[in-house]
Image (cartoon, rainbow, N blue to C red):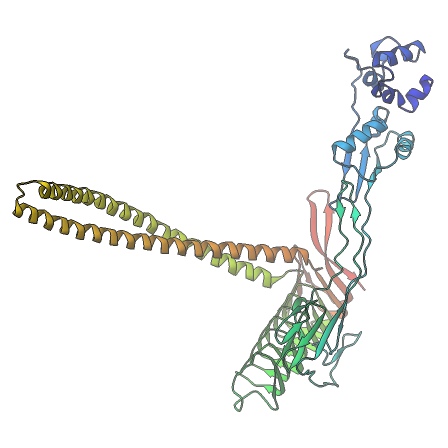
Length: 571
């Protein structure tokens, strides 16, 4: 091997590390070939490192700079190499660097690394130094439902966003022991390996289906049967329920009174003003100024006027006027929303127009038209889960109240413990007196000349001290009982605080994992006096816009850094 190969391919240092030659021998070889001069100032940085020289040189030695980027999934590693110091870098050094970083799987071959080192110029460059093995997906479970599982199927939303309400359909009902659903098992995927040599599981292929009211499953959890006669529905997170059905042939009003039913309520008429309906799910012809609390979905064939609705499912209606609605799922409206306050953790989809309303929809708002020339202003908030923020605020309020109670109660324990200490001190004192009387009494009895009067007097003192000691013990037991009860109450408050803190963490975690795009879409016209708020920015619409999408974007400003801004895109 000649010296040109040693230098050009950086194998000289490798030979040194293998023990084939020493640093000094390598220096002599290079010097003998007259490839370097004896003057220290003419040594190259690479030679200084190879020869391990201790002399100071006039030229500043730059050490090789290697940086590593590894993404969160740990499936690859990108190596950044300082181009100016590429002569100092060897394949062995790269291997050592990766080993120090814990990278031990899927490392690029020596020929690839060496070729990359040979081809780089004075510019910084990057190399895919390691690649993991991607897990292979399996075949997911499939679930077959044996009933119409679209709880909002009454009416169809067309591609144009218009609701077809002509076919109301019938209430889906099942008898006892009816097969509702069956899971057909999939095939589990093949695990992968990340660049640290750790196993990477494939995506979960299983379907999460649980039993709710009126449903049982087989031992293998593959088939689901009804246990009662009623209306089958799928609630949030894949829970299957069969609810008893209450059919009201006419209006909810004077004849029916308020309705509170643990099942599905079917109202063939209108829910009239000032009446209340509480149910698991609801379908009605119309709702007028009523108070509605429903766990799951609501379908209103005609429309909602002036109602207050609280709903953990989704809502479908032909129109909504002057309503106050908080809904967990989507809200889908056929023609228009007017002068209403609506909050949803899902989407707000309107086939027609939105006028003079305040709407918060975490997953966005879609409508044909927004506003009009004569309508009042509207205020939209998208990408923000107000329900989660409100729940967190309420939980923090309860936590603060519990902490306040703990602070109020804790001094009581200190006072009670002091009282217990005082009682125990007195108890000890009387116990000593009692022992003294008992000893004197025994000595008198053992004496041949016992004084009967004195014996009787000691007996009386012993009985009196017994009574005092018993009273002191009783009082101390009561105090100890109060201490235990107070401590139990404090522990209860602390347990509640921890429970609420965990709930807040769950809310925040869910909110972070379910981030929605802050988007407002209009297939028709957006009029002025509309304000749109996102998570980090807002915009006031000051002119008529046709067919537009408004979304929150992150922009980079050279003066202020990264900022958020609402952007208008023409569709």
